[in-house]
Length: 339
Ligand SMILES: Nc1ncnc2c1ncn2[C@@H]1O[C@H](COP(=O)(O)OP(=O)(O)OP(=O)(O)O)[C@@H](O)[C@H]1O
Ligand SMILES: [Mg+2]
Image (tube, rainbow, N blue to C red; front, side, top):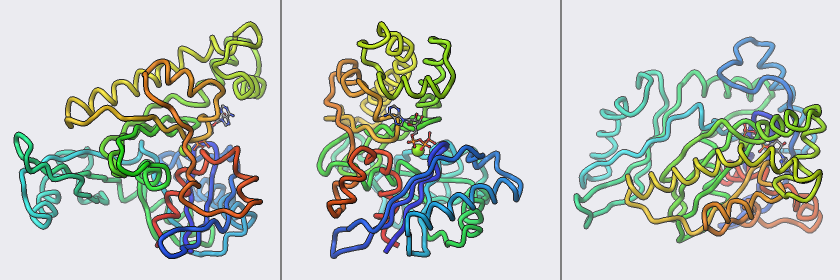
């Protein structure tokens, strides 16, 4: 049994899975909106921590989570994900080289960081021959804060990784190169994934809340009303004389440009191939018209990711989750770690 907990800036999601041979079955899932402070950098007082941990405790209780051990994700903005390039060294040599060289890649002292690496690819016939290594680092202090908040809720943290590392497990498609977009409330995270491994990540501070604000300002309506218009009409041009769509397009365009830049960087710096598809997840993946707009803007196939596709569900859960599946991409991936 394993539990994945995704503390987003607006919604907190939990997924509990049972392992069945090599696969998984869903035990429980739940999500709750949270309006308190979730920005881990800003959380400092016991009171802030208590507010968040009480919400987590209630969510896990309401969702009937029975496991005690929880894996949590770090927002991309709180972690440093880099690609290191080495000559053809052995795995062991790479492990020690990473230790020596990591500090050049991250803006914090290595003593204050949790550092992990994964060997992605050995390009023996490349020019020059190279080993590509994924480096992920985060500040100890940030990781410890999450551990404390979860502990205060009565659970234990058994694993920590970045949100995009989690997503890769739940929504990537084997034997392809894909671009995955986690379209959240405060941030849009972009990953390029090849053969189910993360080769590139980027976080853009433009997502669902920016969409809602744009609609609110443009139509002169409250945030709540704008949220409803956004969800109902999105980028489609049919309602309210296309006003909602018109307000959203410039903001959406920011994300489109970041997607294009990401692909360009991946091709140029890592000699990677153009992704065969874009996989959209996160709450804002539900924005009406988003897939069609992205397809037109990038020329790539766009699909809405289903993180439950690698998990067996009973009929009732499948029914309950069908409209919310993309929301659970990070939580599913975390639970699939299988601690
Ligand atoms: N059908 C929909 N159409 C458009 N937007 C939607 C829809 N449903 C939810 N959203 C938006 O999704 C956002 C919440 O998504 P999500 O839960 O993925 O964010 P989060 O994980 O809390 O945030 P972040 O990842 O940025 O920290 C909100 O901005 C909400 O307005
Ligand atoms: Mg999120």
